[in-house]
Length: 363
Image (cartoon, rainbow, N blue to C red; front, side, top):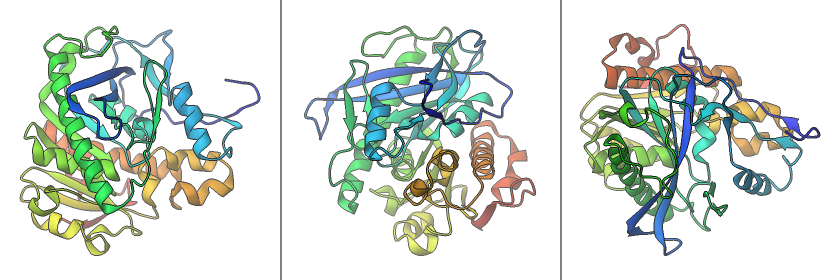
């Protein structure tokens, strides 16, 4: 870190297991990228319980080129700050055991690392989390050759959102296919870069879930609709697009919103989707929150210049409480649905005295 840069920090995970991570560059030769005209390619970070992490460097929150692009997006307001590090040991050997696998899709104009606080926490409690960047729809995506792809123009309309979610759905299905290659002992990385020891044996692809924030939440619902391999999903404060918005799902799904969003009353995409959820369903609310209170931005906002506050949409909820409540709720959902741990149920009714910030809306 340069001596003249102000540090920004992220809290470490709360679970008992150390965490490792590896990046993968995946290329889908069967699809043409609608923005670039080339074969569709995605960047992925696989975060997992590690066997040991001693003397290993951690992954940066963003690689250098993507970090510069993010700072440019804020017009110099954060140039004097060093972006945070993660708590994920790069390439650490994987702790033995087959683990449930969770796919993650970030919000529109957000990066796959924007939910590092949640992702690392899930890994520290025994999940393998596969976070996917969606080039030209995510924020800043850096490839191993140094190319940095940023969000394309005019992507926020309903039509663009629906098109973007369709691409994300295909991305997630492709990534899940590549995880199958990995589980069979192959190496799907485009350059065949070295994989952490034990990663191939760590993936339990019979227990797959998905979660996402904002447009990533829509992608979570969409991929469940399209792919029965995905057994349970979470949408963190995102509208719903595509066929799933009308047909719903026959597997467990959790919606979380804010009073600002109030999805079941104010978002026209939520009520028809909600009405067609025929398995376990719940709608919960994070108190005193805004849209990005579900992401790392809630923890970054208090460490950055005050004028950035409204831009970051982090709400008035204290950062530590937002982080703890979202971590606990998402983990409780997947513990219940993928591990059969019924003791998770109290929080999912919004009735936990430890997390009064989580309120029950409907179920």
